[in-house]
Length: 353
Image (tube, rainbow, N blue to C red; front, side, top):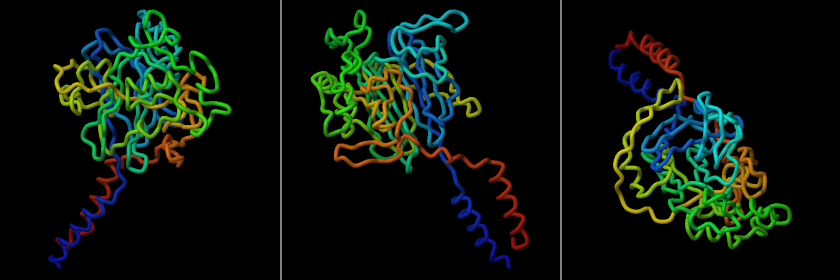
């Protein structure tokens, strides 16, 4: 009977391999600007917060958070913020209107550069960086440790310096989208222009696209602007003056405390790697996080609420349904359950060992 033991042991490993598991992704925010940035975080409806909805990120520091499989939402940077000792105040760009450091479920007021993610849909992560709500900060997204194309995306160009006068905010603090500036259906891809066949790039969106070739420059700019990866961690860098190859110059972030969804704040290492080029982006109003229903992009809603239809339109007219919805039901199996199962099987086979 002892000869049966290896068979039982192999069955244990097969059983454990079949247990439902998922891998949390780590988001690391890096500030290479010469000033403090206050990142905002907006989880889409039905998704958990990542422990905070807004925080202060001084220059030359980083901070990490864990997000579960199926999570979807967006990130952005707020600038020129003035908060008092009770964390009450506002920001000049990217303000979420909460009157606090925490955005508490509110999105960015345009213009704002947005990074958007949907994790683990069909085993793949979908992500982009969007200029559809306008632009306030250079931003790139880099994935590490994943499989697939996992291309870096974002916009490292300072578009505030190139912004036409009719789109400019203040003294070059941000650059509006044409929809935000003029509010017409043609620029907002709404009404009679609310489809990929009727809504075409404008001279303004083409200006953004020229500066940031992989950016979402208008609502139906999908084909060159949405990226995929599987099982990666992601670094969101503000003001990348000389971006690294796959974040190799970033310090290894402290592993986040999974009970708090927080990582620690750390300093940033020296910059290295080749020049990134011009940059990239992804739509917020009708993109992978809810294409066809305004998320505050060139539809004129402005707030970026994060709701949407959950459908992504590709250039060939096909639909990818539910990219924004994720699969929040996929959760990590509790270690106590696994331990119980293993213990039960060991007791079951012990007479044969």
